[in-house]
Length: 225
Image (tube, rainbow, N blue to C red; front, side, top):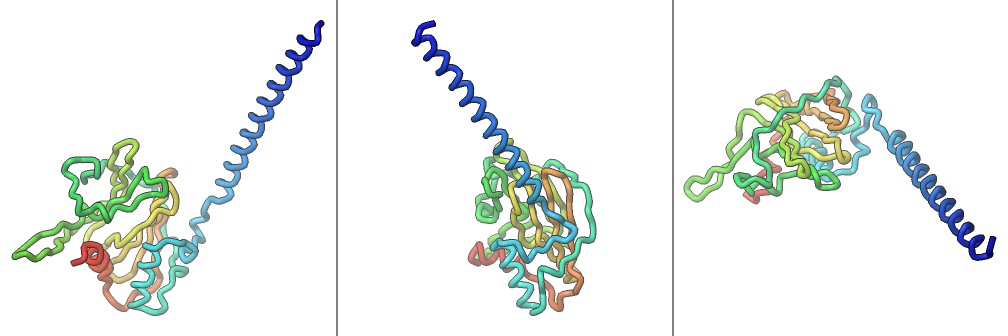
């Protein structure tokens, strides 16, 4: 066999070895990522909301602390775990013609911005009387997740007069955290896992000594009313 043929065979064998090594490395990286994700799974039974770094959460916490100094996110206790029932939402998405642009600044996006949360457009609207803008509230509130890739609007929660989602944020790409006020002045937090279709409900053990007007404050500040 000539030297040229030996050289071709050697190069071919080297390429095969390189490809196999690359595939093994990719597989190892994928396995490592999976292990990291599994190790980062949240234990919702003993979850501490004070460890979360989010401006919406921080604003909500400071508001309740202004009413009651000893308000502490660490005090929230898991009181129920339930299955998430998703329904088709009844609001307009931002890509639809009848979407009211007044709600644009109220939409809350996940980190990759392929989904957003809307808990405002069903709940309130603006009325103008004698050149004065007034916020009109509905008795009920619909909380929706809009998937921009699939162009879907899904209702993930619904609240009546006794409960109000005052603010919210995304813990990750598929987990929504709802910060809620109640008529009895005892705030709640609901964690909604859209991948596992689970809801983790937390209650504050103490009653706040004042009625919350956080929602009105949040809306008025954004609209600059």
